[in-house]
Image (cartoon, rainbow, N blue to C red):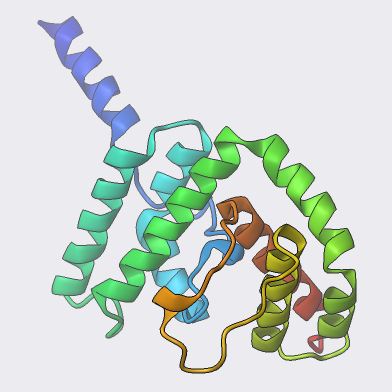
Length: 191
């Protein structure tokens, strides 16, 4: 009986994550573009332990559901400084999905970063010199799409997205593009 209780306690401790000061941070490149640093920090505090589990190889499905439930309960109990479930959940799901993909395909991310540093060198340089990151992101995406399909042209403003023929792009490309743009912007920011 005593052995069963100890085994149960150890098993529970292994599968019940908790946010700690040493918990994995949310990769900023995984956050939705409209997320604020405050919102990212709130989610980091809530799901840091789950990110640790994902980074250690845990599966996505159960962890994502548990993280979502934790965010939902925090919003209901007014522990999110007025930030809503939709944005906090999106931050969480993007972070967990991106971390899981990075864990599963590290070589793809490494190779993608090497390729994008070359493809986007001029845009990254402009961001380092003060170019608006939103404009840089648009230009980077256009350049990426044109590297896949040279005839791609960006849609006119207010075009219904269902009429746009955008080439398929691996999620690693978007994550690494955001990472490189954020790093380039950091070079420009005053210290």
